[in-house]
Length: 135
Image (cartoon, rainbow, N blue to C red; front, side, top):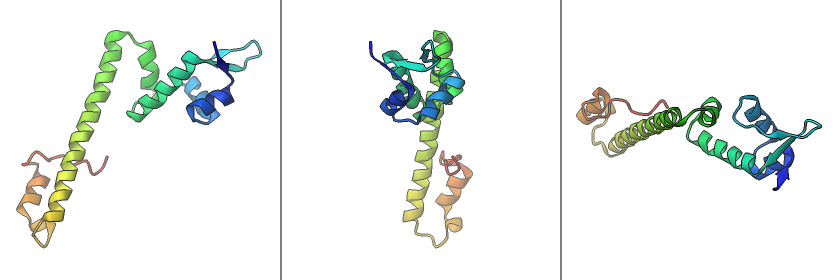
């Protein structure tokens, strides 16, 4: 089994060493310790660190990521479903925002405020009530 010290592990994962220490502080990562107290990272710990980075890209907090490892099947599945549903909602709102902006680019009205279709976007009557302009 291959093991790495924190600097080498950080290089493998492409994060600074302080990030690995922080992940450990919040309970998302649990490297083994040598008798002298130095952290040691094995293949499993490196894989988990890579999964932490992937989960972070989905928008999960470190607390949520730590919970993925601690919780049982049903709670873990609920956490993942919640994140997936929130991403789907963000995607929907971004599509709505894109539709609105596409319309504005093609709009023949001299001012957005005088366009009936822009007004319907603003009123939500076309299914575009919550444009993702603030997220």
